Image (tube, rainbow, N blue to C red):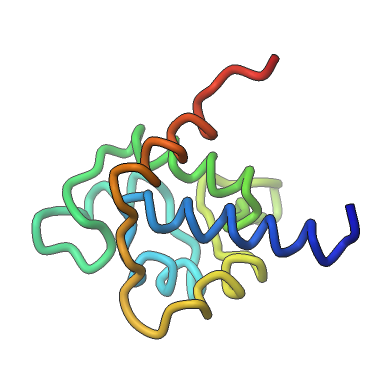
Length: 124
């Protein structure tokens, strides 16, 4: 597969995931400027949070972080002692966010099901 096709496939996969996850555009803008841990995020979430669409536990946020790391949208921050629990936005993540000028549109039910199968199905 040519490199351009692989890149566009990666962008499309990442864009769908962003539409299915509970993070608002504000979350991605926040991790573009500074690193954030799942614990810190869980403390900032709630019904009127600018970062998520609803309350989110730190364990659930960490699961979403791991998925976004696999997709290449987020990366772990590195300090003097190695990797930390905090994440930051990658160049691919910035590129995906450019698709939308305002809030990330939410995915429909069918798209969420497809995404869940892609994310959670066992590798054969």
